Image (cartoon, rainbow, N blue to C red; front, side):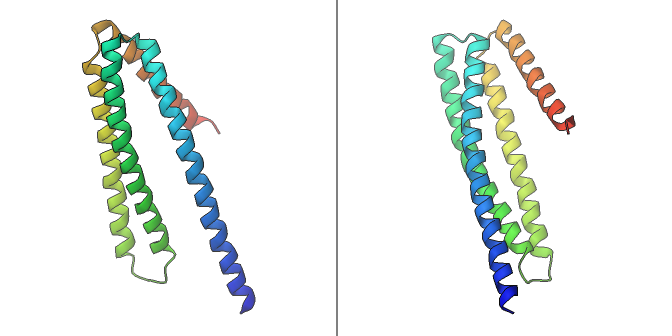
Length: 149
């Protein structure tokens, strides 16, 4: 009996510490990726001062809203995790949380789409062409990352 409880406590502690370190790592990584993306847009699109101010406002609004959505999303995932390992044999609650996660991911996707359309609205025609190139490069990088082992 002692070993069962000790093993369970060790297992749960490992999961909690692991998720803590992983979430902090990804939070750090997302912050630096966001800065890198912002610099890339400013540099490659050759934004003038007025456009830079508008871009910073759009980017700041997007970042703040996305941060809130990500925190809510993480809470839902944690809730699903705790529901999954609970002693309940009824999957309805876990399925409902799963549906909420899917809806939440849709909100995050919509916010990203709004960000790109707001960004495009401040660009000149020449900058829009460069924006298309950046977007295609980003999309191709994601695809190649998914295909690599």
